[in-house]
Length: 300
Image (cartoon, rainbow, N blue to C red; front, side, top):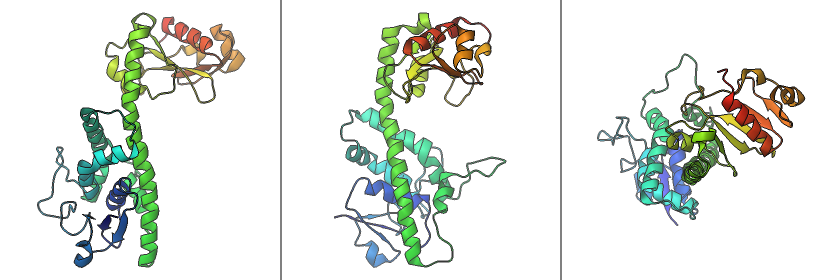
């Protein structure tokens, strides 16, 4: 059994996620919260305390490529990302390059805020108070209580962190499966002519499609939702934008059921979102008809 130490007392997202990461690798990992040198020396892993490799409270701290210092969690992720993925997703077919991409994506898109927050760097600029993930973890810290209650709250926060970390890594891994499927379907369906892409299995397609469809041939994607209905959704110009390559027709906006049937001439309609980015039909065939009409309607 391995033993890991983080500091005692109050806690933040850094030490919480550091423990979540390592418990995700070693199921029987013993965790102690201490600042005593004699206890730290008995541990296999020491993070956020003790002045060692995974303690960022040092003058010669290690910096990310963007100039932000690593926190303990960020440092551990750099060394243990592959162990975490192999332990939690043993059936993955990722090569070393893809593993490295996942490591970098999570370090950039997820850990950046924790790295910055625990090093006293404010990177969230807004006129409104934003509840960030570090703030959420801070909400677990009890006020005016004893050390036993603080320790109990720490491990409650770790439970949340373990679930979040697993889900975040899982989605990054799944991206490569989705990418391969989208690439295959683009070659088979030839959307340069139809401007429609039909997905016959449930996947997260947006990121992969934007990366693969550089010519912007696909205007609408058809897929089955969780209720068994078929959706027609437009394609955004980028992941961060609400602007689409093409919107659904104006005359459909906000209509439901028979009202939408009448306007489109297609039976089995369910709805069209007022913002014109999504509409649905009871059948796949009906959704294809809606998408074909939307492609040829010139009212954007």
